[in-house]
Image (cartoon, rainbow, N blue to C red; front, side, top):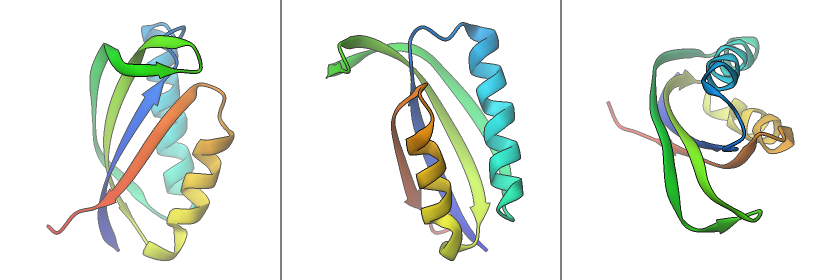
Length: 95
C-alpha cells in the first residue's frame, strides 16, 4: 500500500450536504478498489485562479488515501467520469 494525497475541486453548485455526500461516495469508491481513506479535510468554497467550465469558484476537498499503486488509474478514471468533479490531483507522498 502506498500513501497518497488527493485534492478534488468540486462544482460550486453542490451544497454542504452534496459535498458530504460526495465524500461518502469517495470513501466507498476507494474501499471498493481495495484502499482506505485515512482523513478528509474540507477546505470550503474558494475562488479559482482561472475559470474552469465557466465557474470562478469551487469547493475544495483534501483526502489522504492508502491505495495500491496499480489501482490509481482506476480511481482517477472514476473521478473523471463524475460530473461534480471539475479537477483532481493525486500525489504520492512519502510517509
